[in-house]
Length: 402
Image (cartoon, rainbow, N blue to C red; front, side):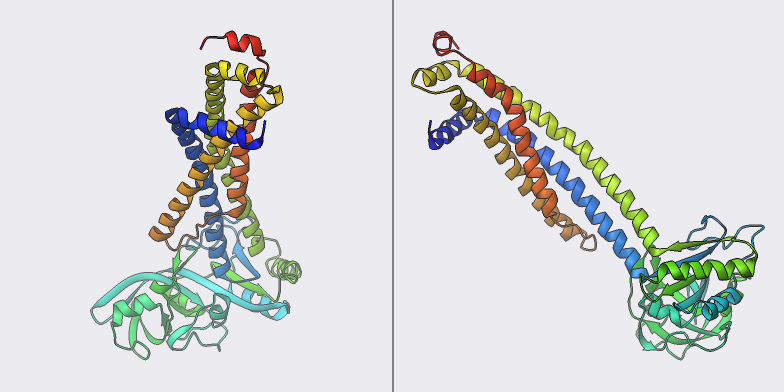
């Protein structure tokens, strides 16, 4: 039997039973769309989270108080019975860890910022001038936090773009005086719009020198010390030196070092497992569709026994009969895969239009894998009906009444 004849007969059978064909295609399309949607969302979530971490800066090590990290970015610094992190610790790291290109003591909290009758409660960060380069912050007017004194107690403040707009409108903010937590501060700069990074809105926050921030917030210790290594290769060495310096100062290892690479690896691993788990659950719908294909093909075989007998009496071999029914199953799956791919692409386009910040996009590897999986299901679940059809003796098939 020629390949063209096989394709023609398979097509005629699918068209003849169009309702059954459409229902089977729909089941396959829904299953494939579910798998691709979940994997696409998982990959997009991974890119989004990794992008958020990347926006924090490169080659970073976060030093946190406590042997095990238990505090969030804005929670209390340190636990009872521990020696807290101090600006002296940051200075010691700066002196004794030569491959640490930037060291930033960080004090965090919330405070009110007032100008005339306008008042905003915002996120307040006490940092140093190196924080700008570490977090890729730039100013649209004025300047960033100054260098200078060890503790940085100057009463100067840098405002986020949104905060400056809320307080001053279109009036230039640099040079004006505001009250931060009831203390008078001079605005020396306004940052360019940065957006939100790891839950922190840099456009709606105020930055003051580290020492002034600790005084404003009534803190005697730091939330974190951020250390930036010169390169990825230098990270292990810098971590060792950090541990040695702080252990010597504290007489014990009562702190936690968290490298950016370790955080990224952990998050990537969690998201990969989650994506695969959700995809496996969605794949069950494809298996159900595969069982449906087998059922449809078995019904088709029982309805076409006379046709099978005629083909065999005209010289058709068992292999030709198997190929015919496998072609029908493969055609069902191919058409269902095309419908599923089209639905997935429409969903991706809609998601990009509705949530432009979420980096969802078609994943070529998953698209190809999904199509191959569907075609494999068609052959796998179509094999039993095809083999059953090929085994019918020609005489018995011709005598069979459908």
